Image 1 (cartoon, one colour):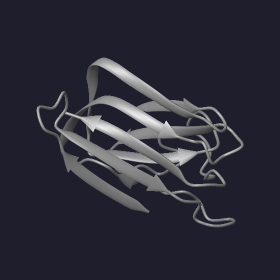
Image 2: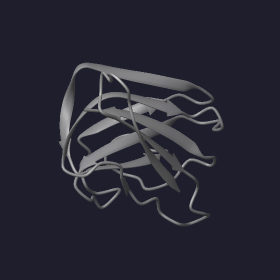
Image 3: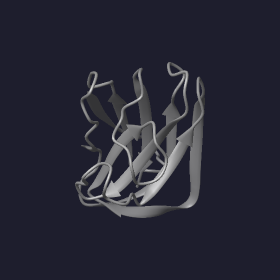
Image 4: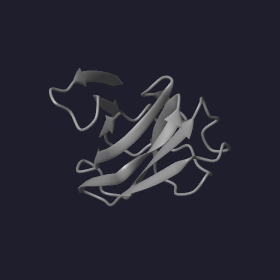
Length: 124
């Protein structure tokens, strides 16, 4: 797992956060990782699912969740073998943002995709 942050020059947003999630191993449930602390506005999300041959779902929570039982604030879909971008014209605010990439849509499920997924978040 790698999380990195970059400051932007003359930004639309104030931070670009990159999250890389690898498969934790057979039979190991995915846990959510914190990508932002405090109150942040999410303006855009890019999900790179090109290494996976199945659809993946990026789930966002406000605060530390129990993956598979806590309802996500937002679920974004990335079809198999593609990179997808979501932009939110006025953004949405989330507190203590936690993220997990999973193979199941909805609240249920804690299985990680087979290959690594990289997600980038433009925050204000």
